[in-house]
Image 1 (cartoon, rainbow, N blue to C red):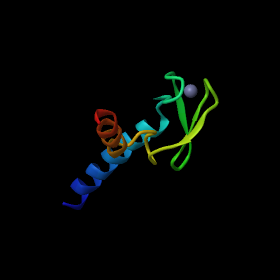
Image 2: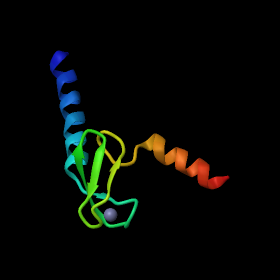
Image 3: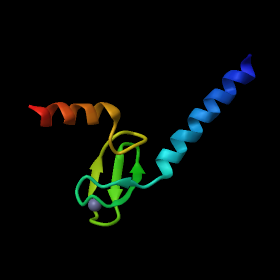
Length: 73
Ligand SMILES: [Zn+2]
């Protein structure tokens, strides 16, 4: 039982690492060249913009939902 739980956690960490290492689209210039600089800190290698975001991805799901709500008004 314990090992099953362990596999699940490992898979979760795996996907988080992939997201962390992957490049993300830049909210400023739109290029997919944003990399994680530190926890919650992101840097775009195209326009040199540094911005804060989610810990594991520049835009959190909650943030996207908020943006949608705001633009819809
Ligand atoms: Zn950029």
